[in-house]
Figure 1 (cartoon, rainbow, N blue to C red):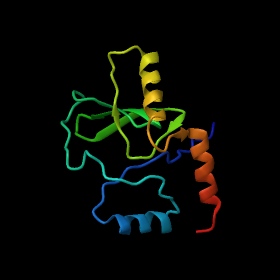
Figure 2 (figure 1 turned 120 degrees about the vertical axis):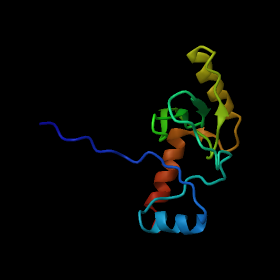
Figure 3 (figure 1 turned 60 degrees about the vertical axis):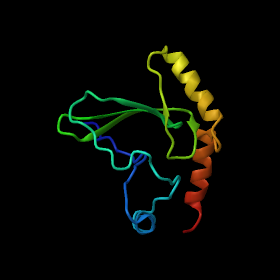
Figure 4 (figure 1 turned 135 degrees about the vertical axis):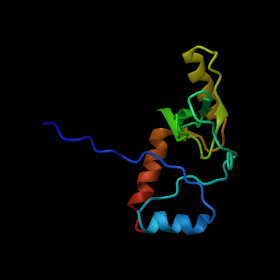
Length: 134
């Protein structure tokens, strides 16, 4: 019998009222670090049940597709990119274009965004922060 896969936390987004209290909890109790912080322009929006309203977003570090399942639970399906831009970040994706043009547009947008770096550079920077004593 093969071993079970070990899930990894890739990222999470949390809507909060008291940011300071939540940052303290997640950094002290769970040992996470804050990699990005900001106000989402989606605050307060609710989504229809069913898979009829798909929203596509270029987050820089991923191309994401958001929709609700039949019971209204939010679902995100995404593809990682080799780029990083500070989060939260979102730019539209034109799905009428061929896939190579979508990727070229996403890369161009990322490179024009302040704070752009490659994922490998961002990971190295983040790993060095994790290795420092808290």
